[in-house]
Length: 181
Figure 1: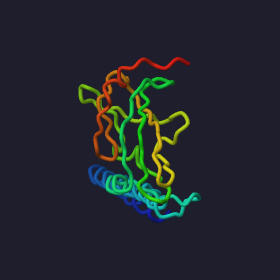
Figure 2 (figure 1 turned 180 degrees about the vertical axis):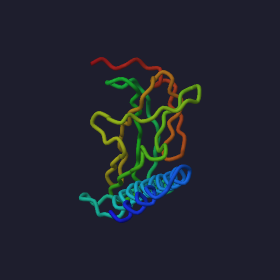
Figure 3 (figure 1 turned 45 degrees about the horizontal axis):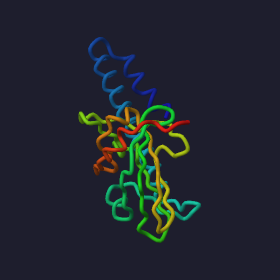
């Protein structure tokens, strides 16, 4: 590794003016390209590792639209003001299989977005109370309620996009007053 870094440095010392500038630009460009590729490889490896590894509860890990919607049904029950601000969207998730499901990828590539009445997308909050921010777990052959939390205002919520599919927010829930504490 040291030799890889030392060679371009020695080349730079031997160059003058514009040549040094060109060599530096090339070296820095290639370094960024390699680092970016390594970072993408790490993320892909983590995703594949999570999918390939047997989970402690024996759940099947799903992360693509095809996988999620082939093995579960998803509906938006309501959108309401969240306790810590923002919007809490309550989902109904039905597991159509006889094994537990672990639905991943809510943060990846816009996996979950709240769309307001003007068409603007709002991201998931990075910290959600009492829920993993990037997954939903569903026991075998049941329907569960799962909350996901977004930035934004509940009164403006129109749609929720999950794994590439859009779900309409029921009109009566988006304008509801916050629950008393």
